[in-house]
Image 1 (cartoon, rainbow, N blue to C red):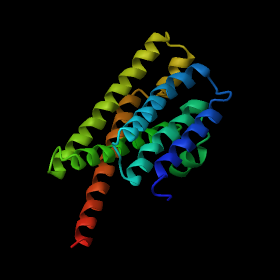
Image 2 (cartoon, rainbow, N blue to C red):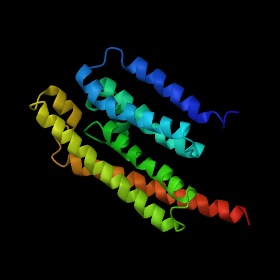
Image 3 (spheres, rainbow, N blue to C red):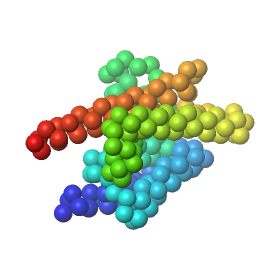
Length: 203
């Protein structure tokens, strides 16, 4: 029963978090621009589910990490999220909450691979893995463009700076993209290793 309705459970949890975190955010403008794309992403996942495009529960769990994480960042702004325990643990001088979120973007490589192999669009795992990594890399670049455009549109104001989230790091965009792709690489390796174990256990 739990396995069958796991995606529904994740969706309900996200909607509850979305409503609660939408109460008195640090910046309403930042709340809109941070959560708009993420809400659209969740709607897209829901539409796919309704239309019969299903993924494993593992894939759904990985996919929902980003919406959960991003919604918190939208409430506080990523620079202000209480994340000192993590930053102090690893000796980071900046708030790394956004970098962890970018790493979670890479987790979407798993549903991409499941879709490609499940629909038999490719019979080769390495092709699906390569496509998934390239897809995540494109999303990473495109999102950095969105941040840049919004920062310019806002005239360099506080909302634009908060959305950009560079925290004074001139290489922030490049590091964010690196984290996106790193998450994809880790996800792909984990997926392929899981498939290998499954195939061996089935023999």
